[in-house]
Image: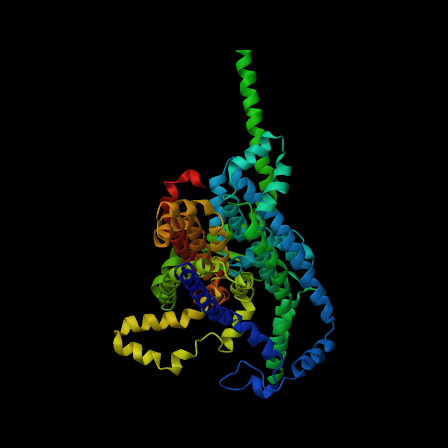
Length: 285
Length: 298
């Protein structure tokens, strides 16, 4: 009886793994596509119907990219530095600010809490495009044009991150915090030693999402920056793929698409391991 | 008398201390929020009741009341149609994403070799499902399922169902890719949610003789309701701010058009937001009602 039971288990396990692998490969497809596209020669890029795998890999696209970037006034590395610098600082500050806000929204009493929650929900809906002009007026009014602050500040009050944090901190039992308080812990201590470790899955998720948004953002560079040295890589990529005429555009777009994607992949690989670990052993029960 | 006032004073001080911490922690977020979200949003609401033109001296406002809304609903022949079709599509996709991600996270919660890798794989689309990359992929035709054409599925479907049902099913098949790629965060939230249900509860009902089916509906599902609500909100927001969203495109086109202007575009955006707000309100209300009976569990 035990034997047949075990057999059943293995069969269902195997079919489970096979099924998940099937969908999983589909999830992986765009990345395979991106990597292959970057190494395709011109005639394969224009092939119809398009193929996923490259037949004759070549570095031609990267050569084209290198040729065009070296002709520019501002070196490519400057854009790269701007992008990475801005994305890292913004992600870090968004995480701190929104975890703090999420903590008090979830576990503290103060006036206007319902009002603030309502405001967050409304703000979730707003795409940056619709408030672009008022935002521009504020940024230039504060004298932030052509500074890194103009890249960072507009992202700081991210409604998505606060919403995620608040919902996650709701799961932490209040008695845990009360117990800590009775033992004489200050709010800062509770925040650093209890809230942050217990919310690390949400922190990791919010980190990935924020990094992604900031890194891909072109609005900041287009609207608030007039100096070329202050613009970001995402802007540079967009400008380049739009302005270069002819077939070179497709070729450069495919190689730069991969380059743009790599930092995202690295951040993802860094955070996801931590995220999954904390999800398995977290004290949130 | 004197003792009473000092006690009241103490209470006031105590409450102020408790509230003060709340305000202090809230402050950085609040400042950023007022400056870069609340104020611009309020401004755009005001704009929506005005005719706004950008001249060389700056902005020129003319108060027109509800005229912008009237114009875009009655005179504009593209906006209401695009809005309605997109609404229909989204209402169809949201439950599908929720069901799919719930199902997958349920499977990913099982024990099997390579589980950690599989989880990472399903979260992967999050890093390319926004902005530039997805535009590029759709532009290059990676967004369609090849087998729909290959096996003449559309013809078969049209034969066995009536016109509107077949179109709907084909629409879902066409959206399958979006559903797959847009459920990363949802799957993650669900998996995290499963960890909040203690294993001892499952053991207890097993001892009491409950089948897996019963324990799913009696334990897992009610325990997951808050997470389903959270995911529904997240999905709605995610879909409505989708970069390929046709409504946003029409708003953007009208923004700098000389005949319509910024005020008109703001009015369009506001109507769109109003509809999303109603949808979110319904979602939150349902979640609240479903979890209310067991308020102390949260």
